[in-house]
Length: 233
Image (cartoon, rainbow, N blue to C red; front, side):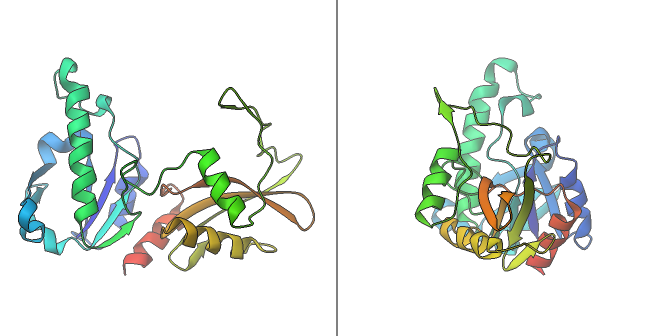
């Protein structure tokens, strides 16, 4: 069983489920907890626990994959809870799922952390420092009062943009120029995630800079969904 944790606003999540063989993947969202998910976990023997998804009892030991497209749940997703209680319920569910997802012994895209259901969830300043230490050139950034005041780096009339993702050892998309492939694999190794998305930019031939980085899986592109299915095959 592959668990896909997302929200109802991400229409690509249902399409990802459909790309797996029938019954091989299940979608979980906070908006459907009251109808589709029940968990009874044994903290002292987590591996022997069971959950119930869409009416089917699933042993924890049979969960062999996890894809999380969100950092956490938000109170608005719990529309079936009394408004005054939504923030509390949301906080409790975020804590529960941080534990639950972290304890699963399976392939994960990406490994949960205390900050996010999917990967380290670093802010721009944090990942820039790490990338600089790895000698990856960074597109200049201007910060004023904690706000990024840089010009839009994706202005295609002035620069070339190279969006790319990697999952496992597969680069998704077009062939990358210059050293970008090495940069991408180096960053993937440093952040210790199977799935990583980067945007590199170039303002002159042979010069490439990292402009954006995300460890949260983007499943909107069809190619990314196909690569995820292949990753679990």
